[in-house]
Image (cartoon, rainbow, N blue to C red):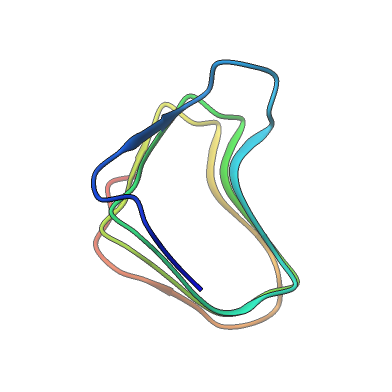
Amino acid sequence: ITLDCNGATLQRVNSLSEALYVGGRSKVIIKNCNIKNYPKALLLFGSSDVSVFNNQFIQNNIAIDLNTPFLLLLFPAWI
């Protein structure tokens, strides 16, 4: 699964607690996203082989919650 935000901004406007949730998945790529003003920008739960690159995490309480014991690859990102 690949999510390419292509520079779009995900900004919290309601009561959601996370912008992106990846649960029980493998081989996931998240790229080119601007995530702003969330309690948790990205929640990974029980997922493996997740790549996160070229994202900006702006004014979030937690940028990435690693609730997973598996491989996570982080590439240049502004946190």
